[in-house]
Amino acid sequence: MRLKEKILIVDDESDILEFLKYNLEKSNYHVFTADNGEEGVKIALSTQPDLILLDVMMPKMDGMEVCSIIREEKNIEQPIIAFLTSRSEDYSQIAGFEVGADDYITKPIRPRVLISRIEALWRRKTKPALQKISDSSLYLDRERFLLIKDGVDLQLPKKEFELLELLVNKPGKVFTRDEILGKVWGNDTVVGERTVDVHIKKLREKIGDDYIRTIKGVGYTYNEV
Image 1 (cartoon, rainbow, N blue to C red):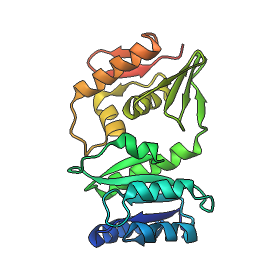
Image 2: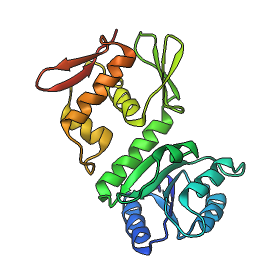
Image 3: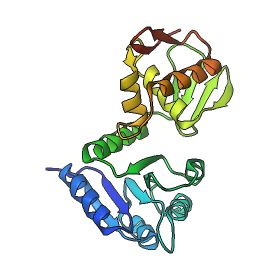
Image 4: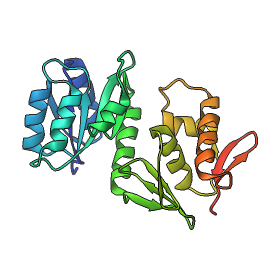
């Protein structure tokens, strides 16, 4: 069976390395591992991975520094980078995105959820960076997490962007609140349905009321305008 993409895991906890490597190899990925940041950079240079799962808190060189070095390294074919983070870690996700991270995955994580998140990252990378939304004057810029409306750049928080992207990619489909929570926030994240309503309200304030329709008692759908 042909191996899929190459994945590099960088984490200083050996049990996590072993767990992730085992489950990713079961899904036919070609997996490399490193137990510290310095080694991670060296392996990235030699193997040219398609995706790096990168722990944030590590001795000597933390994940933020590793990510920054890789993003500035001209001899690395730029991979997708997803930070592995514990729920107890207190840091700014904005800082991670500023150094070039593509996503965050919270530990502990179930194998099926991990594979699903990785596959979503592959799909995101293969889509064009700039997407016109139906026949409207709206565009999504995936590289900068921007909504472009009538030529004006509107910076969206990550979850607002992902929620809008979910809706516009299947216009007319009604997404229940539970579906939205699972696809945007993940099944391991404890948030209530009210979270979806609040984010929908914020999106409407930015794009107008005509695009996202409420289906009473069910959820939301995107209207082509």
